[in-house]
Length: 471
Image 1 (cartoon, rainbow, N blue to C red):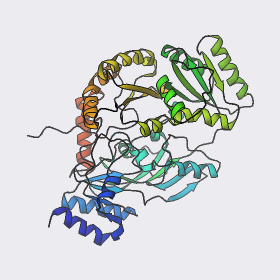
Image 2: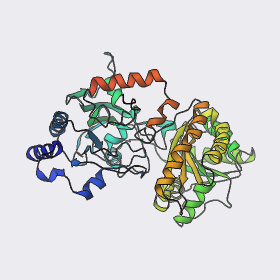
Image 3: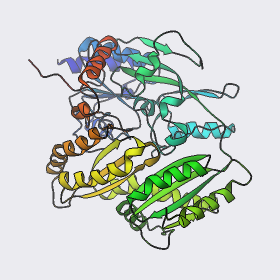
Image 4: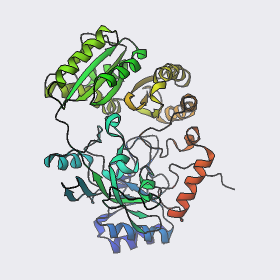
């Protein structure tokens, strides 16, 4: 009897039989995230319902030398939740209880499997607000969002997921349950172990519960779609908006190809009078009586100064949503109609115009002959570069070509002191390119931290940290 068969029998004895899956459909379904660059090959899928069950699963896997891949909503784009080596996939989807919403200190405590949209809804029902937001909000789970330190469209105002995590409960690779920081806003007692698990992509342990901060909701939000004559207008417009709009909450870039794809594929109305070289979607919270007037005046002045070629300011909630849909649906639309190779990169904001220009040259060199779509969060320096597979090309040849060509793109990122992964995480996709953004000393420190918290090396192995050559 094989070791994995013995483990499966033990897991079935410890958990309810329906919580251990070994059929091929389940393994394929739970064994991967959104990208298709890697072939899933897990041995088992387990669906624990309690923290204690998670702890027992980690203990049993450690005893049998089986590795674990934590799985949330599987909306990741770096292969971080993909099991390629016969690992046991541990899905948190049955751990989705909201445990407490505290209006006094404005916090919410929940299990890791709760979808992000549920957190937003629970906050809204109590006239509170959880600001981290991105298009996969209905599927993405809290544990995964924390494990990848997710960002989204409002980072320019509210920051990343890290900024909203107050406390965590985790099960480490040693099968220890750690309660980190609880619900304390101030705790100056040594190393912040909580922060180690934020952005660790499940390589140190499994996040099972989280306490998140909530805040006051904005009164309303106005959105403006701007048509630009070229990319060199982006930074002057951002600087201008930051100076004029006190409550700027999003500044999103959409290139002409992305804009055209969404309008055509979704049968949406072009809100502008013509087509332009580049587009920026601006969101501004309207928290004062004359805020709407100020927004209109700001973009009228921007047009007079030649910062924008055209703009439309939303005048209703419905129109505001129409404008957001153009940006919100880019990733989903491309994924539905193309096989994609995704790059998620960032540079310091002041470098964006020069970087975009040089990036265009790098793209031509790296992905010559491929159609490339760029969009992203200009307000925090984050761009998404999507390479579209030609119809005639096999998936294998396409991904191999792109991964070999990525070095050209990442060399440009390194030149501008940027990151090869801004918000999607490292996973498998960026693991071997980590040295473009991290020094050898930093990577070795990461290995040391993993050895302490996961001495058996069973937590999401092969992800994030480059593997050492075998002797």
